[in-house]
Length: 86
Image (cartoon, rainbow, N blue to C red; front, side, top):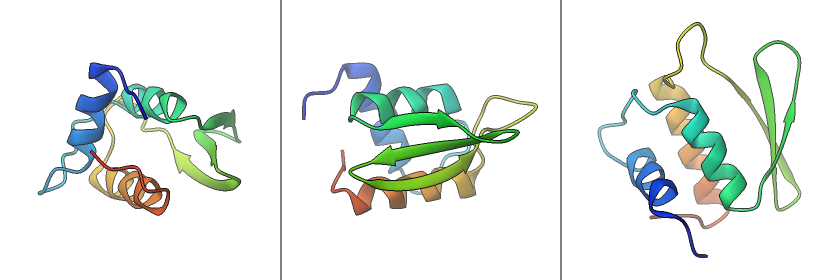
C-alpha cells in the first residue's frame, strides 16, 4: 500500500507509545480514506468507518479537533485488525 507522506506521518503518530492525544481527527479520517475505507455519517458526532466489510463506529471529537487517547487506541486496534501498520 502506497501512502502519501502526510498519511504515513498520521499512521506513525497513531502507533506511538505512549499514545498521543494531539492527532487531529480530520487527519485520521484522511488516513482511513487513503487505505480504502468508506466513511459515512452517523447520528450526532458518530462516524462509521467500513474497511474490508468490517464496520466500526467512532465519535468525532468536539468541541475541539484533537482525538482523545482512547479514540486513538481504538483506531490503532482497528488498523491492526486489518494489518495496517507503519
